[in-house]
Amino acid sequence: MATDVPAVKLIGWYGSPYVHRAEVALRLKGVPYEFIRDDPINKSELLLQHNPIHKKVPVLLHGDRTICESLVILEYVDETFDGPPLLPVDPYERAMARFWAHFIDQKFARPFWMSFWMCEDDEHKEAFVKEAKGNLAILEEQLKGRRFFGGDAVGFLDVAACGLAHWLGVIEEVSGVTLVNGDEFPAFCKWAKAYVNDDTVKQSLPDRDELLAFFSGNKEIYMALARATLHK
Amino acid sequence: MSPPVKLIGAFGSPAVHRAEAALRLKGVPYELILEDLENKSELLLKSNPIHKKVPVLLHGDRTVCESLVILEYIDETFDGPPLLPADPYDRSMARFWAHFIDHKCAKPFMLSMWSEGETQKESMKESKENLAFLEEQLIKRKKRFFGGDSIGYLDIAACGMAYWLGVIQESAGVSLASGEEFPALRRWAEEYTSDEAIKPCLPDRDKLLTHYVANIDKYRLMVKAPPA
Image 1 (cartoon, helix red, strand yellow):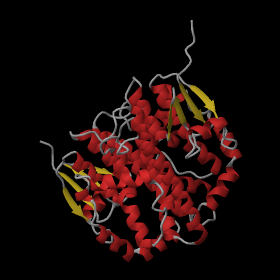
Image 2 (image 1 turned 30 degrees about the vertical axis):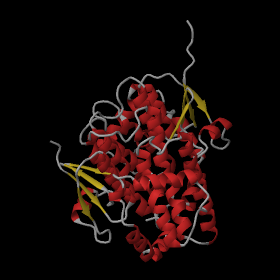
Image 3 (image 1 turned 90 degrees about the vertical axis):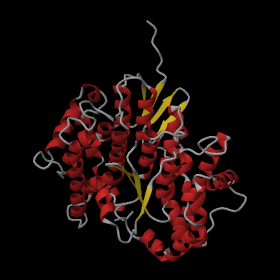
Image 4 (image 1 turned 120 degrees about the vertical axis):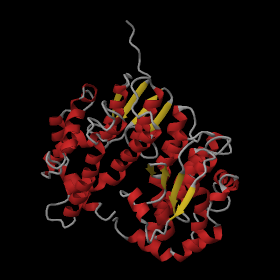
């Protein structure tokens, strides 16, 4: 049997939730792809050539096409390949999914990150934790009793929120800061469990123990970065 | 018949212009509700509790926030000439460059205008590099607009470059580029701002200039301050 060379390649770094977004979208669509593992400390010519503007992953190579930015890649994968739709059909539901994905990347990300890595005695830490928990409450409300943000199946917004499902627990463990608990955020906790246990999602989630070791190893760097970017 | 459309906006906002331009290109009648951003209305705070910003599109009982999200909603909901291209790859390129404008161009541009010293110098260099990327994209397409022969999603997303860039530079007394540089962008800006559908929703130039001059101290303070 001839082996088809995949026309789709994905450049990624180990442990990146943004890369996971792209991988899970391809898997949900049943698209075979070759994963090219890059190194953020030592970026390849291939990456720099294909993403000269941001120099980041993921980068999707589809034949002679290059697509960068994980949310842009999600929409490209959804529009290009057959398979279950990632975005809802209704334009208003689509707008909501895009709005909340944007919220996760823009408003949610910083206080979330800073909550974990600021020093315990830093006066700003408490404010970040309060803001992060406020944002989690907003997302809790968005679930509206559904299994997934997308309804009965994993969709665009679930994939966009993947960092909160799998990486959150690991980062809480490494940093010693707990943001989420089942009492305050019951729907969110159920969603996170459902997401990481989905058969397709599981295939592209980094192993939890490996991820834990990875984040533990970088803890000092993250803390230094948090201090350095406090006033940026 | 489609429920009525209202747009909560504010004078001089390029983000609000994006939404207006899209509605006009689609031929959708709408009511513009002008906000005083120093004194935000209950309607705005209720409609956009997360960001408390404009524009906010109200379509019947639906609320849509974030200008680029609004653009896509308008494109998908109403008949009329498509704003995004048909091909998925071209669509992804339009989205990528719109994202580039909002996330990579905005901050260096503001710092170029309103900071000083080394920060300003570096920001001006970065802003010029960003303009060069956009110039290249326009030249590659060999068409009147980023969207092709007619105005599309990326042209609208880039409206700040077409109109606000010049006004803000004049208000700050800072010039990013000489008259010879970025000829494709200059020609495009002229075409965009003179389009019949676009012109009516561009703020009056003199009024906009006055607005930026009057607020310059505030902007200079804003770029110095740590993020909220």
